[in-house]
Image (cartoon, rainbow, N blue to C red):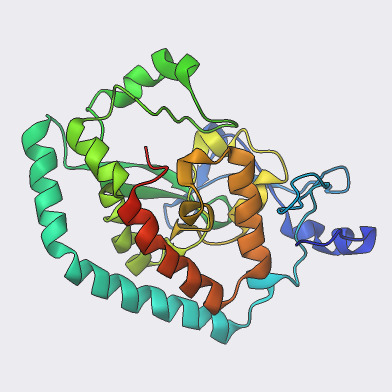
Length: 271
C-alpha cells in the first residue's frame, strides 16, 4: 500500500512529475520522433491511492519507490528478459502470426495490421501495431458510438462494438491481435510487463494522478490485465498501474507473466 507522502517528499519529487499537453500541441525531437509537450506541476493539491480499501486519499509516488529507484543492473535484467522472451515467443507463435494475418486479410477489406499512435514513457509518442480487429472505417464511426461507451474515464469500451469484425472478436478474446507488440518489446518501445500504452487523446484528459502511468515504459501485460481486464473501471486500472510502479521487482514481473497465460486463455474481460 502506498504511504502518504510528506510535503518535503512531494517537493523533492515534483521535478519528476509532468503534465501532458494535448496531442495536437506535440512536436518532434531531433530524431524525428514526436514528443508531447511537458510542463511541471505542483502536486500538493492532488490526491492518491489506497488500492485495497479504495477509500483513502490518492497519493503520488516518490522517486525512491519501486522501479523509479531500481538500479541499472536491475533495469538491465528486465530489458534482457524482454529481449530473450520476445524472441522466443515470436518464434513459437510464428504459425499463429501467419494464420491471423491470413484470417484478417480474407475476412474483411483493409490492411492486416492496424497502426496508430500510443503514448510511452515520459509522454513519448510512438507508432503502435496490432492485428486489425475492426472494419477499415472504424475510426470514422467512433463519434457516432460515443454515447454507447461502457467504460469510465477517457477510455472507450463497448462490449458489442459493431466496428469489430467476427475474426477480430475472436482475436480480441484471446489477445491474438496484441501479438505484433512483441516486436515493439524487441525494439525497446514496450516491455513485457508495464502499464498499457494509452492513446494521445486519452492522455490529454488525464489529471496529475493519472499521468503517473507515464513515468515508466509501457508493457504488453500488467496487473489489471490479469485481474479482470476491461471489466475493471479506469480508476482501478490506474491504481493498479501505480501499485505496479511502487512495488516493482523482477519477481513481480514473473508473477504477472505467469498469470497472463490463464488470463489470456480464459478470455474473461476481453472485448
